[in-house]
Length: 329
Ligand SMILES: NC(=O)c1ccc[n+]([C@@H]2O[C@H](COP(=O)([O-])OP(=O)(O)OC[C@H]3O[C@@H](n4cnc5c(N)ncnc54)[C@H](OP(=O)(O)O)[C@@H]3O)[C@@H](O)[C@H]2O)c1
Image (cartoon, rainbow, N blue to C red; front, side, top):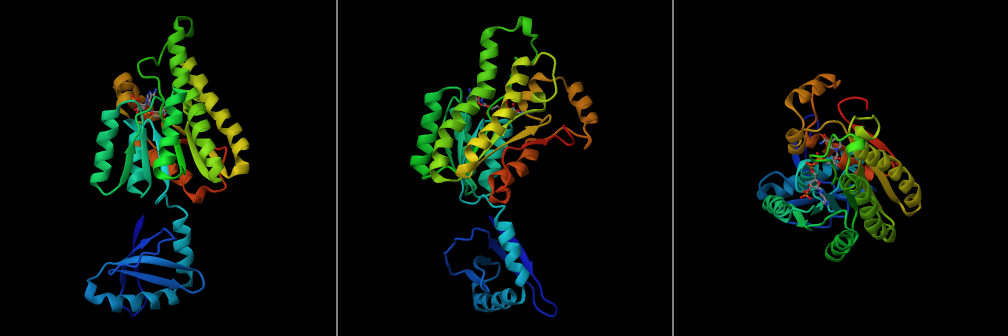
C-alpha cells in the first residue's frame, strides 16, 4: 500500500511522499528515497517530485525524519493495518460481497485468489484487477466439495508459496430463503447447510493445515444476523449461520496456539444482486428505516473490517463475531 503523505515543518517547504508501508522493502530505485528514522526503521518512499529534485528531496526527507520522532511510530502503526503482499483466498468471489472483498484486497496490495463455481465471472474480475496493476488468480471451486477445496488450498500454496488469509464468504440461500420446515425438502436443507456451514469446515481444514505449518494466518468466516435472530422460513440458513458462530469460536481455541486467528463477520442486510432478486423493494425500504444509520449496507461496507481482520493490526483478536449492520445486531 502506498500512502500519500505531506510533511510540513514551520518555515520550510512541504514535502509530498508516497510511503510504502511494507517494512521489508529494500528497493532503492531512482525516484525513491530511503528515509532513515533514528534507531527504528527504514521507510521506502516515492518522491512526488521531478527526478532533478531528487537530491534535494532526499536531503530534506532525512531532515524531516530526524525532526519527527513520532513520525516513525505513525508509519509503523499504519503498517500494521496493511495487507500488502499477503496471499488471501476469497471464496464467493464471483459476485456480491465476496467480489467486492476480492477487488478491495487486491487494491490494497494483497495477492488474491478468487474462488467460486462460475469460472467466467472469476476470470473477468481477475482480468479487471490485473488491468489495474493488481495481483489475482482465479481458482474455480465448489466449496461444498472436499476434493475441490483441498485442490484450491494446495494450488494456492504451491503457486504463491503460502496462504495468509482465508475469507469464507461463499454462502446464502438464493431462491430457497423462506421455506417452512414442514415443507422443506431434504435436498434443500442439505444444500443450504452445506453451502453455509460445511464449506467453512472444508475450507478451514484445508487452509488451516497450511496456516498451522506457517505458524500464522487469519481466517474470516461469514455469519449473519439470521444466525442470532430467528427469521421465519430460515431454519436451514439460521441454523447454519448460528453454527458458524460457535464453529468460529471453537476453531479459534484450537488454532490459537499456532498463531492462527479465526473470526467471523456478521453482516446486516447488504445490497447485493442476490438480495435484490429475492427481496421485494418495499422490504428493503422498511429495513433501511429500522437501521440506526438509516440505510442498507453496500458490499464495500464490509471491506474495512475484513482488511482489519486480515491485517496484523488485529493480531490479538480471535474468536470474535463482529456485526457490520449499521447498528447493533
Ligand atoms: N447480502 C446480505 O444481505 C448478507 C447478509 C448476511 C450475511 N450474508 C452472507 O455474506 C456472504 C456473501 O453474501 P452475498 O449476498 O454476497 O451472496 P451472493 O451475492 O449471492 O454471492 C454468493 C457467492 O457464493 C458463491 N457460491 C455459491 N455457492 C457456491 C459453492 N457451492 N461453491 C463456491 N462458491 C459458491 C457464488 O458464486 P457461484 O455461484 O459462482 O459459485 C457467489 O460468488 C454469504 O455467506 C451470506 O450468507 C449476506
